[in-house]
Length: 285
Ligand code: 3HC
Image (cartoon, rainbow, N blue to C red; front, side):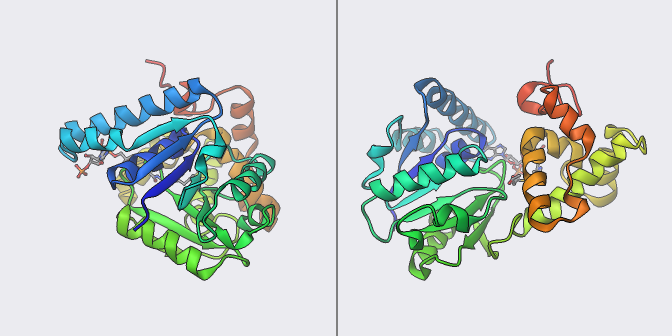
């Protein structure tokens, strides 16, 4: 059983991953670039644990125990004794490669799994930036991580089978997620289907086919989705949606992955969805 877990990044995804790992009883070390980001990540995580308590999903004792399993740091060198590390920082290839290059030097266990939660970047590119690419794989969680039960496991061509098994066993047995395996192709399984769907909804708004409200109501009531595609895009972050679209479009050259001009303009305007207070909907109130 994995005892020492590392999470790189305490944003939306990183805080969610750290939360489920801490609830599972592992010792969880979370890295952020600056103390203020670490503090914001801890606050986000505490809020989510409190919500779980208020919804009757977690006892107060278990919340306190989970908080006791968490440590925050701004030093990557503190990760030397980690058995599994899950990276969830910004979707930037160069920054991710740099973090994995450093982690590979720092983490001592030769069978430690160094996992990326990237949505769309090639796992092989990240793995090949290290001296031990056998330790690197993709482990892709879904937002909100404490609620959604899926994880995608993505071995690169160079991943060591034993390391992949270790990461998958941790995600399923310790974190209680259901794992599906995908090849290292941009979008893996879920985003390969979900991203063009969200982009199509943006194009429908762009072309004046219907309002965001009616598109979302259509998919909620007509297809029984928990939220419509534009509410979902706002939740994922419109900058993230545009970024993933660009990576997938580059990978496949298929116009269904091309970022619609409206989405690009909204990102330029700073309308990034829920996190900025405005996207297809207004969250400022
Ligand atoms: N901890 C534990 N459980 C929690 C919780 C928390 N912090 N917050 C909520 N829950 C539980 C609730 O108790 C409830 O459980 P129940 O169904 O047993 O009663 C359930 O989660 C739903 O919570 P809410 O009632 O608060 O909220 P909604 O019913 O409105 O659902 C939602 C919110 C879970 C976000 C739902 O709308 C949903 O699933 N939307 C789709 C999300 C989705 O598609 N995510 C994937 C995005 S793509 C991605 O992440 C990949 C990336 O690469 C882009």
